[in-house]
Image 1 (cartoon, rainbow over the protein chains, first blue to last red):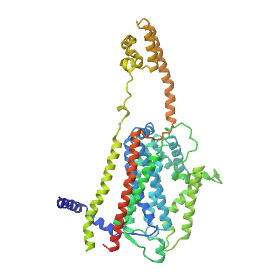
Image 2 (tube, chains in turn cyan, purple):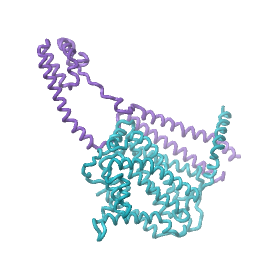
Image 3 (tube, each protein chain N blue to C red):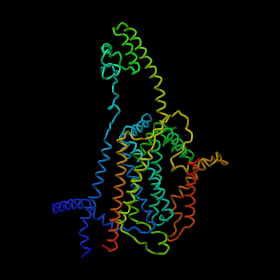
Length: 361
Length: 189
């Protein structure tokens, strides 16, 4: 039996090999090397984002089978998912917590790249595609927040879609485009649903593909310590040594995700009423809190322009600096870049402080 | 020679790995499938509210008020009037039953009818008063997810325990695989 089994397995392998040529892919992955240093731990965040994204797709597809994107049925359909669909509340909770995990990991991943100066030549495009992926991920969070159509999400979306209005020329158009009209309503919900399940996934898949291609093409950067000394960091093959290590992290992350989803399930607010007054104490999700608190800090008017306009311009400027960082800090890889490190740490501390302030206020 | 023999063992180890890795995963998958599919209804219309039948229509055994004996004659009277008592709350049916006991010969039928109509009117009134309040409270309430029943709760906790057990086993297996892969890398195989 055994030789027959082996023969048939070899036949199947040969069949696939003739059509796909997967041995070439495996050979490439074996050739690919990953630095094995104390900083390697940051490299796991990249694949962790992909794990959360896959969980998002799976749970999102299940939720989409029952969700109805109309203002009359949205809240009720989510209520039905949570009360009538077997383990529907768990699927929704997994979707929410994997989204939270994905956004948190994206932040950690970007901060690690920032502090390790891995964006420097020749990896500028890898960084820029990464910034796009961050924006798309936040877009997922923003559009997904409205879908349960509860009073808090409606109020938060009203505030969120009002912000672009302060941008000259295109601001009002952007706001109208997002809302599908002058105010948040039925069209906004339809649009946000389409953005959430069609537009953003297409863009994110495109940019993930590009990002991964660039990583494979350019390889992973060496830690600064080794670059400064002109040494080569110890390396391990990507396949199977690094992948096996990553698999352990995925398992732990998956276990934690399921446990959190069971013990801290996501609740659902009451159905949004278009004519109802704005509920007190509205706040966006945690990943927008630092921006929200920053907007609150600015006074109503500053000499000639409104405080809100100034705050939005400041945020857009910081985002632009963030996007073009590889061109602003285009020194050779072995330079330490102390100013960039100091600014980075200051900004991270500011974001953390604003988030905590907003949470406790 | 040693290295070669270890290389030959590799497919067997791989088979063992698949055995350890896939079987518990498949078992877990079926547990999830079982929890997933148990007690599912795609629409609330498939689980309609069972029509409530007044105790009198079910006979003496169904209602403690209608025990066989001196009241059996009353029960027969009520049987004839069964459609008349449909959709009445239990309290009303009990009151009407009491009335009918007083009226064994059916002389007071008009009074009985009037009482029933009044009870029906009261019920409709109560219903119209309760429904907007109920709807309002339902809309105001924040829905906190909870287990539907003890079966679901046990299933989910069993799944969680199984998941962590599998994770512990797989982390151990992966640790061994990493050691082996690192050893091969050091030897340059």
